[in-house]
Image (cartoon, rainbow, N blue to C red):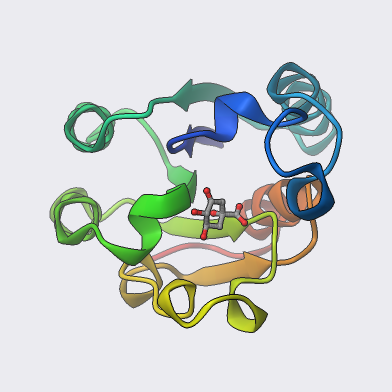
Amino acid sequence: MKLLIINGPNLNLLGLREPAIYGSQSYAALCEKLKIWAKELGHEIEIFQSNHEGVIVDEIQWAYGKFDGIVINPAAYTHTSVAILDALKAVAIPTVEVHLSDISTREAFRQFSYVSLVAKKTICGKGFDGYREAMEYFTQETPS
Ligand code: DQA
């Protein structure tokens, strides 16, 4: 399947950023793993990262008609962005949400996710492996 993988703000700083929570591996290392897993699972992927909400909305709109699935870690916008939720609803591309950390056990403000309202599945607290699980979803399910 053709999958678009979207990463939100500050994920480009993985490795540097709060390693006790997000791990010591870099964003480049994550991208390498994503490419390896995509090959193993037979997916064609495009990886996108932005620190800007509107740019993420533009990317989701651009994906319409081009991708079979979206894997998204909206990062901090998870908890604030009705615009990203609306964009995902608008294009209706099956979406799996990933978080490196377990947002359900962190600060109260991280425990609500707008994207969960549209996501077929939400994977939390599994680090980089969560992205693999998200890609596996698209091999096992026939998204509607
Ligand atoms: C995150 C969790 C968010 O609360 C946080 O703002 C992030 C990363 C995660 O992957 O665990 O930037 O989405």
